[in-house]
Image (cartoon, rainbow, N blue to C red; front, top):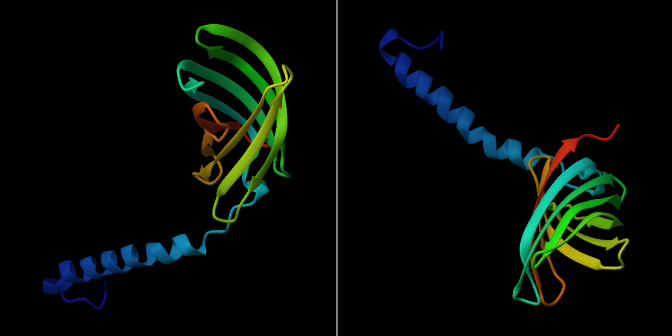
Amino acid sequence: MRNCKTSAKLACALLVFATSVALKPQQALAEKACSNKSLSGAYVAVGSGYVNNTEPYALNVLATYDGKGSFSGTVLVRSIAGNVTTNVPTQGTYQVNSDCSFTQTGTRSDGTTANYSGAIFDDGNKFALTQTDPGIIDNVKGERVRHSQ
C-alpha cells in the first residue's frame, strides 16, 4: 500500500483483500489427501436411528483408531427399544480413501457386527457415518478427544 496515493488507499486495501480471498481456494487444493493416518487417536461417537426400521436405537462409543486401519473400543451405552446394554468391547477395521470418505466394520464382544460408510472432516478431528446393514438406520457423529501418542 506504500505505492497507493492517499485518495486511492481504500481501493488499494480492497484489492489486497480481494487478492487474498481469491487465493484461498488454491490453498484448499494444496491440502493433503486423507489416508488411514487421518483417523488416529481416541474418538467419542454418538449415534441414533432405528433397528428393524421401527425400534428406536441409540449408542455412545469410545474408540481408539490406530492410524493403520484398525480400531478398538467400548460401546459405553447401547439402547434398542429401551433395552440397555453397557460397556461392550468392540474392535474392527477401517479404510480411508484419498477423498476422505471411509468405511469401517466393527464386531462387538456380544457377536453383533456393524458396517458403516461415511466421511472424515476437520483435519481428521471429526467424522460422520451411516450404518449400511439392512434394516438398521444408524447415523453416527464422532469427534477426536485425544491424539495418538
